[in-house]
Amino acid sequence: MSTVLSHLEDGVLTLTLNRPEALNALNLAMIEDLRAATARAEHDEAVGAVVLRGGEHFMAGGDLKWFHSQLALPPAERQALFEQTIAAVHATTLQVRRMGKPVVASVSGAAAGFGLSLMLACDLAVAADNAYFTLAYCHIGLSPDGGATWFLPRAVGAKRAAEIALLGDRFDAAQAKEWGLINRVVPAAELEAESAKLARRLAAGPRQALARTKALLQASSGNSLPEQLFAEQGNFAACSVHPDFAEGLGAFLEKRKPAFGQK
Image (tube, rainbow, N blue to C red):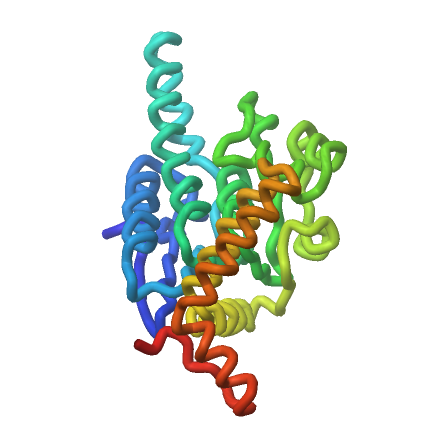
């Protein structure tokens, strides 16, 4: 059975992590299944938005039993193995960021280690009120992966990022929202419905404009203001010749809901 389940409906691709017996801890099979699922989502024109969820728990980090089994390897061999493994993990991070579709993390229970990194890679995050978070790597003598050290300082500032990464303390959904790591906190019983509602709204939007907006937001941290302004003007102009622009204007003037994506 796949460790990542896929379901496409109304332009929303829901990817469900599927190792509930291990709190969705990341193992080699899930690394490959996540990479493959996000690659398909990136290139599937039927997909307008993605929901990434985990059921009772989002993801409790890496599979520590597998980590422990690798201690028997000679150090040089172990180092090479882990470098190759983390490179494969990072393919998912890059695909989530690169794809021209909004990705919504739907988080309940544990989001630890790479689970937190994966949530940070998503564009939006909705968390249940029972969700809890920890970067946790320091507790087993590891440094973070999955882009956590890139996302955290940009989300919460350098000092808060250092606190989260160096101490590895657990914090709850209310704290995560206050720090700007998630967008919304909802009752656990409403998480699935609220996440799907948000994703359907995104999937029904002007997909090419949202893809350009996502790319602009990501480019902003590496651009000077003149560079970003130039990128904005080029993307704005490109949007102006897309049918969604005429549809959006017409819907506004006619006081109706726009039907984006029509030929």
